[in-house]
Every structure is written in C-alpha cells, then in structure tokens.
Length: 265
Image (cartoon, rainbow, N blue to C red; front, side):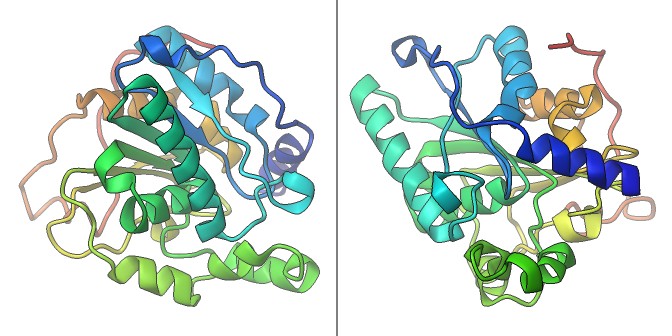
C-alpha cells in the first residue's frame, strides 16, 4: 500500500498542464471531455486520451482546471465546474455541438457532478464515467486538512461530513444522464464504499469495481479502460435481476465480465 501511495503522488505532481491541441471540434459528433483530480494535472490523462482516440475514434480533450498558481486543481468544486460550463458552452456554440461525454478521475468526478446537477450539464452530458471519485467523501481529504487545508479549499468539500457532499447527494440526478462509477478495492483514496454515489431511487447509476488497481493507476489500467469504453458505447453487460445474488446498483459494486483486451496506448 505504501508503495502504491508513493507512486500515485509522484505521478500526480511531476507532470504539467500544457498539452498539444489536436482536437478538431468541427469533425466531432460527441466529444469526450477528460477531467483530472486534486493535486494533479492534465498530463496524467495522456494514456487514457490516446486510448480513447485510437479505439473509439472520438474527439477527446481536457481543460486546465486551475487552482493554486493556476495548477493542481485545488480551487473550490463549484468554481471549477463554472470553468467547465463556460468552456463547454463556447465549444458547443462555436461548432454546433449539442452533446458530450465526460470521463473524470477523483475530484474531477465531483466537478462533473456539480456541473450536471447545478449548471448546464444535464442538457449536454449523456454519459458521465467517474474513476475513483469520492462521491461519498474521503477521509484522506480530512487527514490532509491540517497540512494543506489553508490553501486548498476543495479538501474541506471532499470530507465525508462536508455540507457539499451532503447537498450533492440530496439533489436529483437528471434522467437523461447515465452515471457510471468505477472503483477499485486497492484505491487508497476512494475505495468502493467511498466511490458509490448516494442517489435517490431510480437514478441511472451503475457501480463497477476492479481489484489491485491503485488510485492513479485507474487512469492507465487496461482493465479499467475496457470498462470506460464499454460504458461510453453502452455495451456493458446487463445487470442481473437475481436479488439473492446481487444488491441494487446504487448499493453495491457490480462485477462484470470484461470485453477483449484493448489496445495499449
């Protein structure tokens, strides 16, 4: 576990936000927006971006979510969601687009949820796939507060007892948006108990779980990528209806058979 935590922290901090602009939005039907997590940068999304471009032939892009010295995604979740909203609306208006999909890692998933539930996301987003997102909050954020809570406001929002998490859980989930949460038993930040959204009955939510994948490795694991791809294509196997062997999707993670191995980035 200590090795996984060290590797994840080094991966998050060593990369940067500048990326090459290669997306031609005039040739897109439904772009895929990638959102990175707290203390991280856009470069951590590189492998996932390449896989989505090569396998799905989709337009894929990311945004600089700002924060401390305009980096590391430390700003409040609502402020970051506002940046996402403004950027998406500009792109959609300029290129005549109406829908997008979002794949978001860690805190990025909470930013996407706020965008969907409180801003314009309900009319734009068809699929939201979250990877290791602390939908119910994470005690890792609480433990970091004494050291860095003074300059990273969003850490307070990601604790399990925060008003932000409670309010987000009470708000209705739009029927038109599919939410797929992917979690790992080996995730030290947001294990399945943290990553399973608390949603009103009837919400279009699917919880999936994997084993032996650390928090940042969710971004480059082949196994996780296969689930992301199937989620975006609506090809996930149907959930069983046998109540004796499986809880509802909003209560327990669903183990699903994987499609054939995808191409490595």
